[in-house]
Image (cartoon, rainbow, N blue to C red; front, top):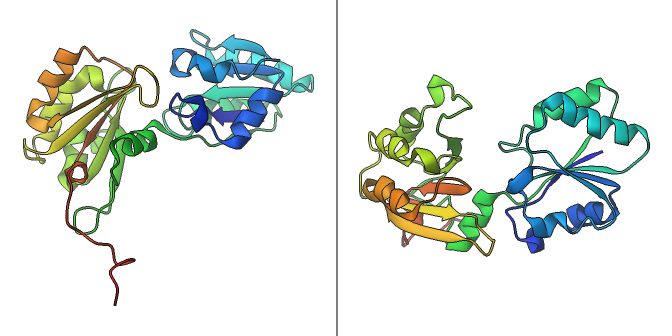
Length: 238
């Protein structure tokens, strides 16, 4: 069976392999509202199951039983399965049951957000590091990975699953980033509902509160969001 990245929402951002698997699938189990309806509809000949509300054991049983029957099973994750997708626990249980698993990568929302804004996360003389993280919520975050600790690097940062904690995010980051640091909040990137808020770190909590955005959003933080007259060594000449 296959774990397939559904991308950020726009079906045209699916990989060719992902689309082929969806069109050939006998069974598709998708990650609820995190996967766009347009992507799910590509699996026209499949039995389709919404995994929202399923426990791990129920989900694994559904996929394993169909795979054992020789059916082509696609587990459809939003973005890329390797980022906040609970891939590891599902794959571990399936392998324990003797089910062979293959992962097909997808376009993550943090990549789609950079494309939407026309920015590069790694700029010469500005930063060569990108941090992908989240604020603590139902899923805890190790103390060493608190936003206040990561912010010490002043690197480019993308914060997932944290729009509902914008005030806490702002407070944690302001210990290291100045309040004038540029920020972008990108909601439901690549879909018709897409919304982009550009502000400074000092304005973040208020701007998010006014927008009403609570979920399906990324918070991008760093100097990469502004234009800089830098040149890479690659095209710098001799």
